[in-house]
Image (cartoon, rainbow, N blue to C red; front, side, top):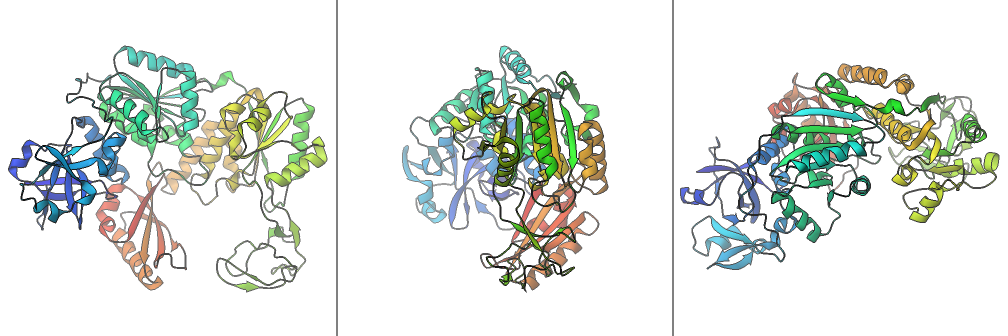
Length: 630
């Protein structure tokens, strides 16, 4: 009989294997099995007992005896999520296991009722030499292995799917009320956060919550997993690991700050946790709640189906967007004047700057532009001497005479970048007379506590590290300098991410405070709408709909890898023909002209649906990496 197996590998499609009729007594839907892939054995999950595949298939080697079984609704959720978001179903199903069950070294083949060789030491030929009928029994052998029981408690009918958005600067009382109501009925509650710091803060405010995340020890995670899977009503807080817990009786799913998954400098997570949480709540027919300080654009699009509770009007915060002229060098004078105005009014000021310390750059006062390479437009960094020849690291072009502008042939001046250190020196020289404290990710807890204290300096400066619980309600005014250095204007959602950070700064300052944004952002008219969130959301949603961008369409990065530029170009031309009119090609370019690991990569950005991308056949090609952006 043919079965579909989702392997515990980075494969988005299940593979077909064969299993004898006698083996169906031990293997069921959602069972964990051992299958051959190449010259080795891998674990997988049975996701279907039907297949249209007519080619050569290999047999299922073994099955894993375990008291743990996947709940049917959980398996349905994982399969829907894998198809919707192009995620590997086998790896998602592995996330349902406890840490000790997930370890391949703990899987051993049973020989005469005793544990035999471990799975990593076996291959298909080695199993066949034992002259035993396939599939062979395997077992999990580990000390302190949690046993949730062989029978799950019967899940009662859920209250029905509903979506609710809580907009408030104090959300803890709402969460405490939800947790108490859910636990009283005998159901578990799931609270999802974007980082460990927020999870610890929620546990401190609600002592009944249980943490479950990757930084816990294996013993603590095993204990929490056994309690949750065994049917004990728990309020679990964590991230993606907590989301994939196979609760038998889940009563509510709560996402704290869904916009925090967007506003993350340095990259974003591959898995869209808020969207996965909403999908799980819909499949299990339970309430889905989001709590945030800003209105997410994805929720704004379906606002007619969401119950919105906005309590932010209780806190008055004045927001002002101050434009900076394009090409303005260094630290602008109006920024220093604004800091002085806040200090004269008796306010404590928090200044947030992304760049800690940077190199100087060359600036043309006549053209009002930064000096760039005439070949590829890369920013020119000054060398050690004024007449030193430079080589562009991007295109390899060579230019000379750094002191003159190649457009107007006039003198270039050396200007310091607008970074945290140069701003601190200017504040010390012109305003305070002393160095204000600078908070970064490397700062210790004592320095942060001293900076957050009301007896500390009246001006505190820092990077994103200042958005910590210690600094909440510690300042009367906040200044966000050059947000475009955090979120580059080439990102389609840069305006939304800036709006999210500004909303978080509103939450951080006291009632009656001020938030100032100094920006040269290209979509500056949109940033001016920060004072009116609804107007901002309407304009941003219209902009996304015009250009086929999320949440109105899915956006994918297709990366093709070949040994030469000619082969990469040929594959990308073929991909354009396969896409045709099914999807919209937004961008096509080489990622780099320099080979990495012997391969050159070409990038194609396309907009459309997952179903349209599957119809093109690109997912079945070799050396193609598909990244779904959000």
